[in-house]
Amino acid sequence: MHRSSWWRQAVREAVRDTVRALRRAVAIAWVLAIVLTLASAPGLANAPEVPTTATAPRITAPVVLDGRKLFELEAAGNFSARDRAARVEARLEAALEDLLAANVSNGVAIDISTENVAGNQTIHINGSQLMTVTERDIDPLSTTTDQAEEWRALVEKKLRQAIFERSPEYIRDKREAAFKGLGFAVALYLCSWELDAILRRPSQTEEDERAESGSPATSSPTPRSKPRQTLLHLLLVAGQVSVWTIAAYYITGLFPQSRQWRYDFIANFTRPILLLGDRNSSILDLVLLLAMLVGLWFAVIWLTDRFRTQVLSVTGADRGIQDITIVFSRCVLLFVGLSIVLQVWGIDLASLAVLLSALSVGIGFGLQNIANNFISGIIISFDRSMKVGDFVQLDDLMGTVERIGARSIEIRTPDYVSIVVPNSRFLEQALVNWSHGNPVSRIGIPVGVAYGTDSEQVREALLEVARGYEPLLLAPEPQVWFRGFGDSSLDFELLVWIRDPQNQFRYANELNYRVYDALARYDIEIPFPQRDIHIRSQPESSDR
Image (cartoon, rainbow, N blue to C red; front, side, top):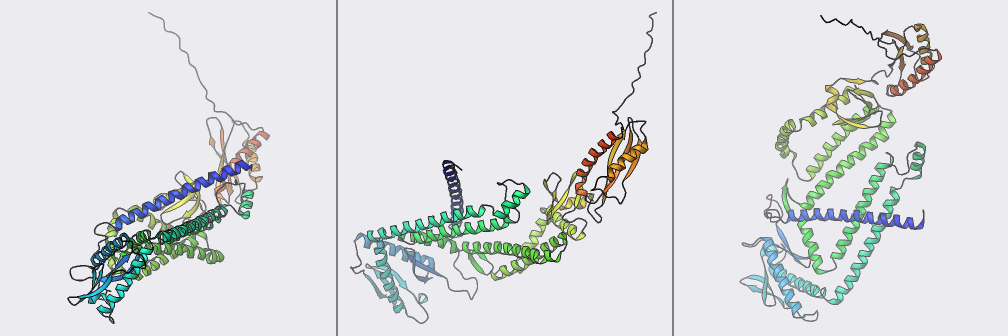
């Protein structure tokens, strides 16, 4: 390839992949925006803070400064734990702004003290009350005085750290660290991008197979390599997402404001929004549950595929039997795995009985076609009247059965066109299975010759053609039938037997060529349609 052409191709691919990455990023951003909107919606974000059972742990809310959790508070009086934490956070932020406005440095003391007000230990900052330490906030082996002193020292330490992290020196150092982290993430992404391009290239074995089959070099990967390439591509995509996630987490943790945004973002995902079973589930819990279900699905598919290749293929069982075994195994494993996942998640399967009974009504009315096709697929699989590899005919549709699924059957026509047919059609209509039982079948080649032709000579010519064509069977013997007297010809039919009915059209085509040549050798005329026209004239009548 010319140097300039190579550069143009590289730039074109880089632009295309960049646009693809931007589209992916925009899609992820939209999903996150929708999730955050749902998480912050009224009635979801402000879920009631009540224990679900009598033995449930106490409800607490964290006090956060610059994205770092200081301590946790419980409800007190008319204020919930979240209300108390929000009030303390607002006072801390106001105190921090006052200290920054006063240009307080690490060498200047911060006025934070504890006092006993009406028998309660309180923490004051800059002369204003920050919070009151209650009996419910302390550990069982501690006192309110000790707890207040410990939190006073912690608040002072974190305020000094917050002031330092807003200094120009700190921001300059962390800005350099952020650029380094971003550069490292970009380098890893480009490496994974190049690795993905390498993995998408066909191997030498696949290129040899394509060369032998005559497929072009730009054709799609072979069926054997497609699952492997798909799995590797998914792993690379997961790696790329992990790289950007880690980079975003690291960079946002360098600065106070971005760290607070990160904490709020994660808190929206971890805040309980839905009572699922015996636990309050957050958005993150629901995502993990969905990931577990998806992982269960792929694990079952992988296990059953390994069982097919390592066990069933070795036994030499029929392909239809293998498909039935795999479908049944997948259903059993999915049912058992789903039951285990839901039980571990705290969802009682007995509580789903009402939901399942309601769904059964919808299945009976709205999904009756799907249920009909599913049951028809089970009947076809166990009836064995049709299996994968059979050559069948359904009305005007004729082809080879490629797949028998739970809902439909895939038929590949002689034109190599795949047609998906619902299972119920194979039970409701007459099905011709050319391969069922004994695949030997008979085909007929109609032949018309001119009147006056020796019939024995026609039979000899046609039988000579049948015996000289190797793909045809000699037992049963080929026959020539005299079908009748046509309008313009004597109608014969050459009947031959074949063992592979899917090739009947190719055999009929070849036999027509050979019959035409044989009739020409025997000087047997193939007539044109003829019509006799009789013209009858009448004498003109004289006028009287």
